[in-house]
Length: 263
Image 1 (cartoon, helix red, strand yellow):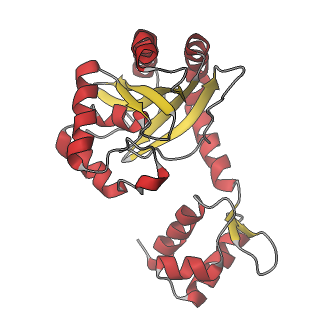
Image 2 (tube, rainbow, N blue to C red):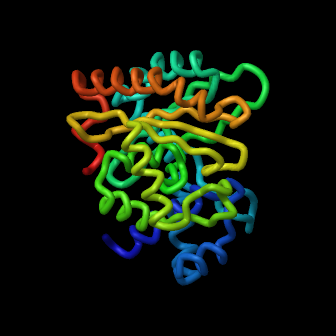
C-alpha cells in the first residue's frame, strides 16, 4: 500500500469516531503525518467529497459519502431487506433493541436494527459502528465460534479499550475474557451484564453459514427490564432467528462471497 493511500485511509478511520471533527494539527500529530502532507491529503479528500470543514479554518469532518456507499452495498447484497422481518419479530417479542451485525474479515459492524421498546428507556446506539469485541455481546457471540487463539488474536489487534469507556464488569484481561467466552460456548449464546455500559445488559448469538459465523443478532436493553432470567427466557427466540437467518444465507447469495467470517 502506498504511503499516501495508507495515510488517507488512516485519516478517514480516525475521523469516523469524531462526529465533531478534528483539527488538522491534532490529526497530523496523532497519526504522525507531517502537517503539510496531512493538509494536502485532507484537501484531496475534500475535493473527492469524503471530508469537509465545518467552517473556514475549522475542524475536518467526514461526509456521509462513505456511509452512503456502505448502505448501497448492503442494499445490493440484500442483507437488510432479508433480515428486517426477522429483526422486527424478535424486537416485538423481546420489547428491546435488536441489532444485526455482519462480519467482514476481522471486523464486526452493526448494520441494521429494530426497536421493540415503545415507551420508557430506549437503548439505541448508532449503526455503522464496529463492535468492540472484548466487551459487547455481539463481539462475544462471534468470538465463541472461534478458537481461543483466534479470538485472542482479534481482540489483541483491536485492543480492550479504556475501562472508563465501558461498564464496570467489562473484561480487561485475557483470563476474564476467556471466562465470558467459555460460558457463552456452553450456552450457545453470549450474555453480558453491565459490560458494555453501566446499567445495560445484552445477549447475542451467531448466524452460521457453512459452519462459520457470517453475522450476529443481539438483543440489548436496560437491566431493570432485560434481567438475566429474561435473557434466558428469550434465548429460544433469539436462536430461532439466527437459525432461520443462517438457512436463508445458505440458500441465497446474501452477504456475497461465502463465508465472510474467517475461522
